Length: 384
Image 1 (cartoon, helix red, strand yellow):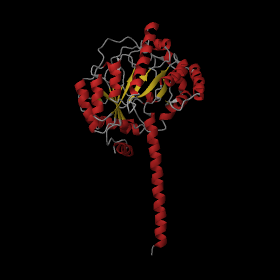
Image 2 (cartoon, one colour):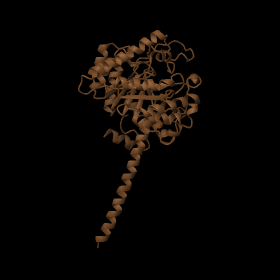
Image 3 (cartoon, one colour):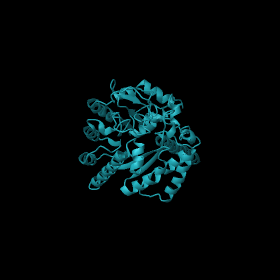
Image 4 (cartoon, helix red, strand yellow):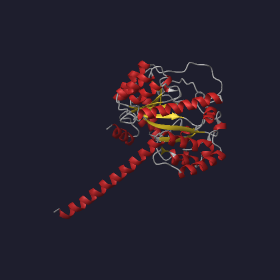
């Protein structure tokens, strides 16, 4: 019923009739890594005044989960600018999410976990575990994480051991959860890693392997942006991957290739020609809550907070006028952060799914019209 109400909202100009399907919850901005392409902690960022990383208060998270459940949210995705497991109440929060009957996914570096925590993730039946890896060997991992080679290689081996632990513990459970995906941001510095990462995913036996081009911070990460030579190198690597593509490993190779060949790929605008084909209705299906409590329409709207859950109930924000105004302008094709959408749109799959639903709706309407016409003709034949 909730999904039907979301679809119905699209027919009413982007009106929210129920809560979002999925909420990304950033528990903390804390992170012990310095990934070169990270918007929060990259060493390429200009020096900023030191500040304490934001952490969502556990008590507020607990009440928030009740608000999300009551308005029809189906999934909570723990991710963000920090490492979720560095929240002091990471496991209790996971437990509470599952107790509310919500699906729960975690995006993590999977580095600083001990075996009992990994076993607990499996016992809690975490639905999905996305491991941000970016490299298929120790030296490359160290370079991308801005660590010394020896320390970086040790960290890479630790991540692999943790992955193997999750998969081994999971194999002894009836539901075989969580589903594990290797997530890889591709920059000019790791174009040669597609093959090794794909082979690593096959060797480990994870369910999925995903590649996304870097969404660079303009003027700061230009040296990482995929230039023409890198794009051509990646296309050649993809040609080889297509030849040994394994049906048991879910991937996004087709979408990745489409992005590499996009008209704006050389300028880092991988989805510009795609997003203009759909009205943006992400604000009916998704919401992001950041570690400082601010709420965003999508992942590209960080500079345009709608409000804060530290000051208001999430439902008051979701159904409030600020959110409603953004939905109306989005449905009309106007957004204050639209320039960012053309780089990579994180909600593109939602837009495509919605377009397919509209197509089916049109087919149904046409079918009903044809049936009514046929019935009318038949009635005319037998009537007085």
